[in-house]
Amino acid sequence: MTQQFHAMALVVRDYDEAIDWYARVLGFELLEDTPREPGKRWVRMAPTGSHGACLLLARAANAEQAARIGNQTGGRVFLFLHTDDFARDYARMQEHRVKFCEEPRYEEYGTVVVFEDLYGNRWDLIEPKSAGTP
Image (cartoon, rainbow, N blue to C red; front, side, top):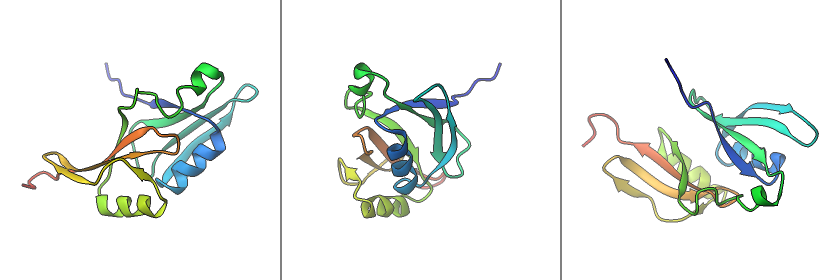
């Protein structure tokens, strides 16, 4: 039996503002934006060229869900974005005034920095060490 993650739901305030931010700031691709029942849409986004799981943007439908926007994990890093060029992506994010929670650091597994998305969810931007890199 083969299984894989397909999508991770991310609670957002507004579909269009979230689509704009993830596309413009992180360079994500809009994979699908399908209307559903009144007021709902099936919105999937992923890093351009990605072949793995995607984000399913889920607009908060009630006060309890709205209270989770930006803090789906109690303040912990929630999502991990791998890149093949840390410097390029870090510079792009700086240009878009992304909030960084720390300075970039070098760990045994690669270069990493924690940042917040437009709602305050914490992400790691990681360029993994290449095989054979000391």
